[in-house]
Image (cartoon, rainbow, N blue to C red; front, side, top):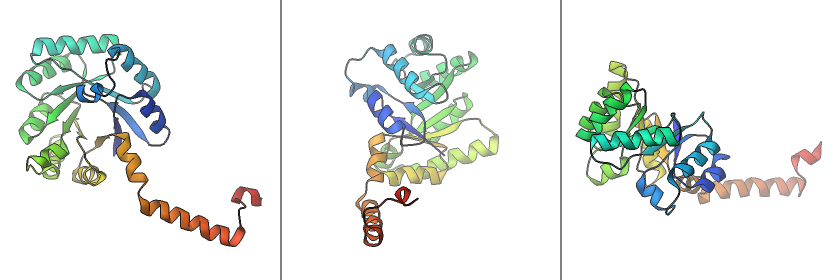
Length: 226
């Protein structure tokens, strides 16, 4: 079970990276839009320097035709680093270039997955990750958890090396449901994790413990009692 940060904000990665046990960073053009007109390659090189090579970095292409997708992927691999996972939407053109890039040894994250057919075909094309869009699927009356469960079953049954990278969440209940259904990884906005850890009930429990301690020992701290 792994958490990735769904953000391209470098300060956010630094801030929450020392708190949460994350294993990588994902992005897409909609996420990048929040950062404004950045120096694309330089920005991602800096993200890599922050997260290190031991964590995964997933960068999405924007082209629609296979030839142009391949060119964008090669530019990313050459100008960020060769360890980037290229995020490619699962379309006919996307599947075509996934097979080509895998033959060259590139890492692939198959994204914009809504259906079982997309996921199965991306596995067969050699994708390292498939990214089902949990909340968007739910909004379309597609059973996201059941779909993820089917992906997990096929991965285990046939020995695919693909990991399920669940995405598109509006709350932590959906994240938890994705993991329970069989997702290996979830990419989550750091703010969503922050909000989950700052619910009122948690704060009240901590405050109550502190009050009970003070009733017995006053303001002295445990390490001061040595």
